[in-house]
Image (cartoon, rainbow, N blue to C red; front, side):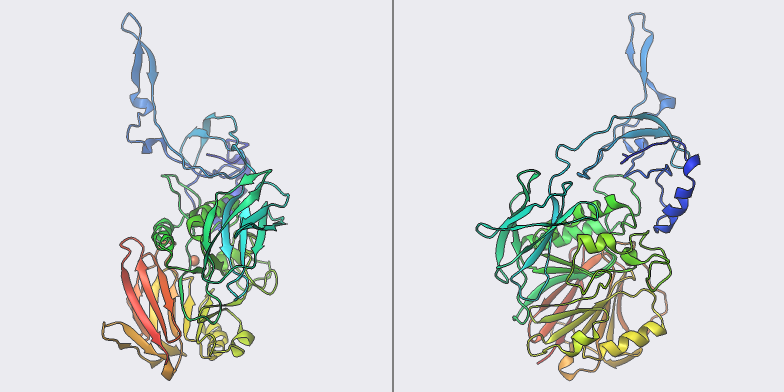
Length: 487
Ligand SMILES: [Fe+2]
């Protein structure tokens, strides 16, 4: 399945290989001038009949074979990417592909349909939410919500995308919306939850990093993250029963790395989550980094995106474009994303007793620690990082030293007493989809739990207690849990 395809020969586009490699994937997809959206081997069909063994399907009256065939059936899961698609049959494998047949372009029945609405919050009031969606039409559309209220959308020009604020909502309530216009059609009516207001007593949320996307069919696609589908399915079950009020995805969002269609695969994947609750994101190397573009690390992990698709699809309450840090309060928790020193010094801890710092690692080294640790001295309770693709939890740590250890409560759950605060607890939560990393056999004494499995963290915050659980997305069971308490 190809988005567009001009040539069969790869000879004229050998340069595309170097671009391919810098996106992080030395993929198995055929290196044609335009990359295929997805591909499936005909031989993956259990009833595949190869052309060496072709069978006679029709005999004439003399008993001679009239029609011989080889055959296979493959099925593609296709989403509306608003552009014509062609199906191309090629032989010669992925290294020397040569086209045998191609279909005429297929058009989607409504290429301008409003798609992939996702919610986020832009202040700590719990009374307003931003809805972002994609449409092939550049004219403003609308979101209709909460008993006849309506807001017109603002169109952003990085590809075709619309955004709408819904204000005048109530915190911690269920409401509904639909979005679109008479010209392009309307989404179905969707029920959603507003988050609790900053300073309220309770909050339930998911937090994880490094998720990405993977195909729903047997296709080979560029740069997939095999665990993402099971992690989303597991979270979807919990979102449906209404027990979660927001999601924090703290970096390495889609791994689209310059392939726009892969943002659409990702948005389609997370739809059942982000339709319903606020889906907050933060930027990491795979969204931002590109040599010579003003980033700190000289690598090409964003495949040339330089943060633009991310900041358009997921507009967070940041200071400005390409200044991607922000803080937000929900329930008794104040969330600060990397480098929010000023913000942290001014937090009213009687309103939000919990301070969680999320960040992304880039390269972990002494210079990184020297910059971050003074920021954490603002009595940060919990530090959550992604980038490393597994789960690991520490003691209360500062400067590589354990300043306090958790104690077991009556159920045997590790409990950190932050009433007697010594240092933040750190956890790596980069296990939501990207191939899981194994740990080195050497274990530092500050490392208490290390798990190489796919999953996500479920968190429950009250004024006196922060409870975190690492849920394995396949078994859906809790495989690590800990409490941080404060009286
Ligand atoms: Fe990552």
